[in-house]
Length: 456
Image 1 (tube, rainbow, N blue to C red):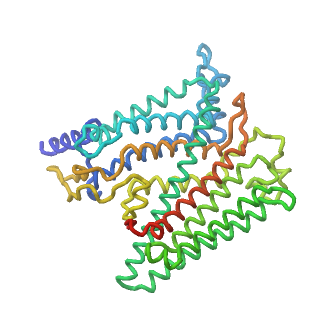
Image 2 (tube, helix red, strand yellow):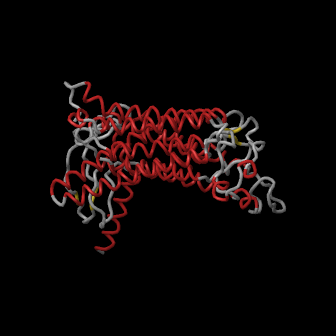
Image 3 (tube, rainbow, N blue to C red):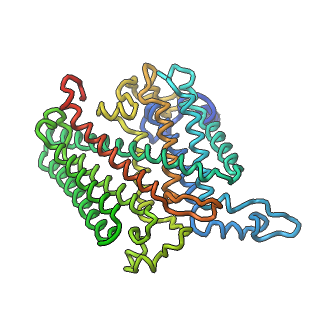
């Protein structure tokens, strides 16, 4: 009887977690967590789930496999007496990615609008933010289903430009998160070095700093070797050289005596990470150049085949879905999304940029229910630890970035039957790298320029 009551209690708690506003139950083996962290993780899981669905939909050969299902796809295998109604050209390929990411963007925009100016968990809207997960999932599924009924028309062309703008902003957010991660990494290891075994910790900092710079330098050499020609590719030569100069400048500025006095936490580790990320963005931009002579495919580089043989210039409709820069972009995206969900930073400048107020919420102890299961602790009764609206805006931009990454920033043509690289995508990525380096340089020089302001 007791076991039946216990099972009934657990089931009731799980139902309240999915359908109500009660703090979610954690499994017995999990540590007690803050409400703010769990909520961000679950919303990030929704984003990752949509990303996984998009990846499956865009897999090569998926449409061919669907057409083999009897009575499913229009033009596919048929069953006598049953008419095939599904347009498989829409539910797979880049069209499905556009629609899936459109649905996720609408979902996060909805919560962005609802959560404007929520100040604490006492606000009734905070209950919506931190609970009702089952209904949120149903809303996301409903919007997704509706997105697949959008007529082709100009939808893909218009949504492409939304993706360009949103991805530009998300690249900047990624850079801010990497800066924050580098500051936190440096701060923790320096503190550990001061507490004991300093040689080991400082050796670790030196090793990773040198490693990042070595990888960045190797990337520059490979860029000049494979993405430039003696009598062509002037844009690439400018991009590589200019970004290299900017990275040298921020590295030198980060170790200037006045900068070190004003910001002791700054250093070469942070600059090395930013330098390496800048080289990635530069590479990503060059891979979108429609001039195939300046943009060899990965297959041609590995196989040592000439660019013209590997991918003719006269084939603008050819789409290389899975290239190296897209995979690296997904890895960085996953890292930044997870880090944004669990981050607890002491960097005041980054907190202002990311609209977070770490440490403002109530510090709660571990909360255990009568059934012995740990519960999520509400640490936002006195004030939210992050801006709810900005967090959803960040996930909205992430949805657009995923859309552009999975489709390699290709632009659909008028009849939406072919995809092609465009120079606007190149300039968007390059300009985002310049603006990102400018933001990082500002975090270094601002404490020196404005001596009367507290940047700690």
